[in-house]
Image (spheres, rainbow, N blue to C red):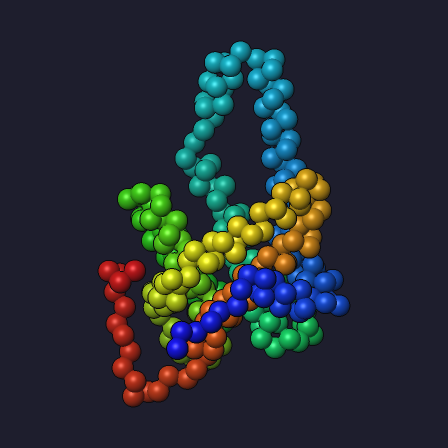
Length: 257
């Protein structure tokens, strides 16, 4: 019998029920990425206004030459570092949301939860999995943009699989490539579901932007927790179950990615 998964409405309802009486905890847990999102909205707005002012008072060809003259690949690479660090912080927040969804216990430190990924247990694995998943996605994108996007969704749950496997047995030698492969298998037939779930927040994103980013204080934790509810529903407890020592393990190769 084919398993039934929760609908988008059901996932969002679960999160809203979880946050009932605890919205302050959810907001403070996400305070760092939320503030950066607000700053990003303000910067984008300021840049757009500056560009409009520049092009309204400058010859277009001169403005184009000036804009390209200062470009360098080095500055582009350096600019990715804060984004990568923010991604790790968001990952730690999502780890905390996943535990909260499973335990229903809101008795945790928001600051500790926000930086949970930087613990000895998670950091190295989370760091390398993000690097590998980004690399594989980039290589697929070289073939064509669409395959890269599809693979990005296929690898999107690898870090959470790593968390479950590590929590199940902290002493186990978890294979990072295996986590990526398991994510690809887990998301088989569910990539479009996840895409539509993300797309369902588009209207709220627009409203949050129009509020000068203030709406992100509530929207960011709502979105992140809903994505964790999606993983919890999709994966269940299959990665939290102890594997028998006699059970053969599948060798993972790069070709399987």
